[in-house]
Length: 109
Image (cartoon, rainbow, N blue to C red):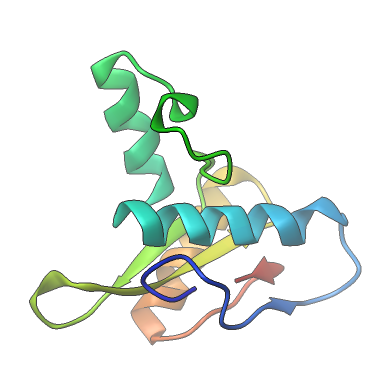
């Protein structure tokens, strides 16, 4: 994803669940649009007593596995979303993708 949440690249590493691709894209979109990882987004919204639907963007999700790519000065330059495994594994793979400067995982955007 770019910084506005528009898809730049998508990779799938095997047949897997057909929904994994669209979920990975939603996770990356959410991380880019909110400049926050999706797990932190969910926790922050819960603290405020609101849900993701209150943000009025049907493409947003708080499922773990979306992580923003932050550039110089903390500016968001894109995001990675991973789906297809357990939520904590998706999140770990997304973070590894960010740390390596690229994407990766069963289905990543």
